[in-house]
Image (cartoon, rainbow, N blue to C red; front, side, top):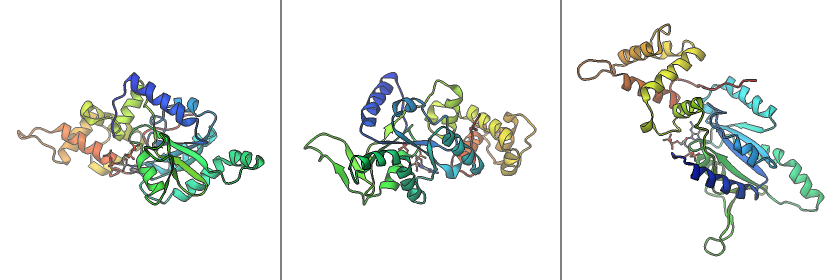
Length: 281
Ligand code: G4P
């Protein structure tokens, strides 16, 4: 799902989020583990400040495990509960259920003191487009989950998905707008495929990717494409074009074809598990 964001969209999304957040105990925020900060919108910290907070580092299967650990610690130190996740599989779901209970234990205790028993925790999923919100809701909630709440057509209201006896999830995720203003953020979002490729210059994008890879994952390009890393990124791209037979009709190297190849291989994990952004103290 791709979005063009305009100020009007952001105002509307924010207003909707403000309303929805009133109804819940816990904000479940998805970030992309390859770019954990650039795939966030820090406005959610303000919107969700009275609520329990869980960050799901999604697409962790595509990110570097050592960096996943570093980012998990980074967020934990800031007071978030954190789970690393591949939302396409059910593997992490039991852990998440447990962490949700842990994150909401103050609320559960408050209820208990007031004599309220077994009131489920209410949560909503938020995140920027393409981060995996729908995938997560489908995997976590599955088909078997009954929808609760108001019947459509009878009373207008929120639909809740009952996950288990302890947790209910708002069925529509909150969509956060990315922080495009920051060029670096825009670059990272483009690299992971969260901005439409039609509006991007693939050649430039691949040069940026090659620069990042050469610096942070030395040897990776040499191994995958049999290129010398001690040359300019443009020269590396040319060598990739040569080695991968990316040539135009007249015999010239097809840089754009090589650029797409490198970016595709990065996005689908064939280049390995790669994190692009690193925590700074
Ligand atoms: P959204 O609701 O937040 O917009 O995201 P959505 O669930 O639609 O997921 C976007 C893409 O990311 C989907 O790929 C989905 O399969 C993939 N995805 C979600 N979670 C994970 C994960 O943990 N690991 C990996 N590797 N992929 C994940 P898609 O349907 O193929 O879309 P696209 O890749 O063509 O954009």
